[in-house]
Structures are given as structure tokens and as C-alpha cells.
Amino acid sequence: MKYNSIAIDGPSGAGKSTMAKRIAAELGYLYVDTGAIYRTLGLFALRNNADPGKWEDVEPLLPQISIRMDHGTDGLQHMYLGNEDVTEEIRRPEVSTAASKISAIPQVRAFLMDMQRDLSKQHHVVMDGRDIGTVVLPHANVKIFLTASAEDRAQRRYEELLSRGNDTDYETVLADILERDRRDMGREAAPLRQAEDAVLVDTTGNSLEESFRILLQVVRECFQ
Image (cartoon, rainbow, N blue to C red; front, side, top):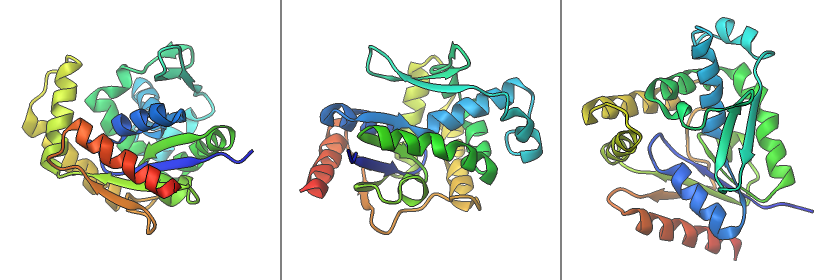
């Protein structure tokens, strides 16, 4: 059986995970948040006092790590580090920074590539990340590059962090967004960029529902 795949790429805070989850639920596809995989590895590096930006620190950890993804009865993707559910912990700002650094290491991306591709061979998937349409699933049926202004993305992330009980401020979040953009677009290994055959969707100023309707329309048109 040939499975369909939808790749959603874009910068930090663009709403990729939120949109991908809803599209997957609408279509009955498996949702795969690849960023959560890198976040889990980043958390493991931090817990082991390793510099997530240095290959020589990260390499010894790879044989030790056990990362598992599970979609439970709540329909949501849960990330496990060993037997520990770290779904909430990997959303902390310091883990986000660690994930951005560790994902820039070519050997790390190669280490996790098979895990991501295997899921697309076993399920209809909606997969989001930074290089899904360009590297991980270059032959995806649908490719979307989702973006918004840095200010809009920072406001969304700020509100998300507050809702999770994180003590932060908007200016700090905006600075982090801009730094992640610089790092993601400037890295040598699979830099963030729009695939040539991807549909650009800019949701600046849109509500959640408006953005979802736009993306769902794009997906349906691509499958026609």
C-alpha cells in the first residue's frame, strides 16, 4: 500500500504543530511532530550536562538514548525518554534552544532520519518541522511552507508559554524567535528554506480558524 504524506515546514512559532495536528485529525492521518524528537534529544543532552551545539559532547550520548513516540487514547503525540513521558518538559524555552542547536549537527540529523522516514512508510502522515519537504520527505504529496511575521510568531509563543505557567516576557520571546530564525536558516545541515514545489502560506494577522481553513483548502486542492 502506498501512503500519502503532507509536509509542513516553517520557522519557529509559525503554528506548524497546531495546524498539522488539526489537519491530521481532519483527514484521519498520523501526526508526526519531528521537532519534538529533536527537543527530546536536546533535553537528554541538557540532563547529561552536554553542550547540545557540540558534536563531541553529543556523540557519546546517542548509543544511550531511547526516544519513543506514542499516540495515546487522547489522540495526541506523546514523547518518551526511556519510560518517562517528557511531552510537557520539552516545551520549556531552554529545551527549545537546545533542540535548535542539536538539530544543526549533521550527524544528529542522519541519526534520526530513518525514524522519521519509517513512519511515512507505515502510515498516512502529516509531518512538520524545518526540512521535511526539502530533506526528510522530498517526495511528499503535499508540501506547505507556513510562516508569519516574527512579531506575530513571538506573540503566539509568548501566550503559549504563559498558558503553560512559564514566567517570561514578550521581548525575550521575540529575541529568541529572531535568534532561532538566524540559526535555522544559516546552519550548514538542512537549513530552513522553502522547497521549490511547496505552497507558501503566510498567516500574519489571521486567527487560528482562518489559518486552518486556508491550510485545509491548500491540502484538498493539492489532492484534486
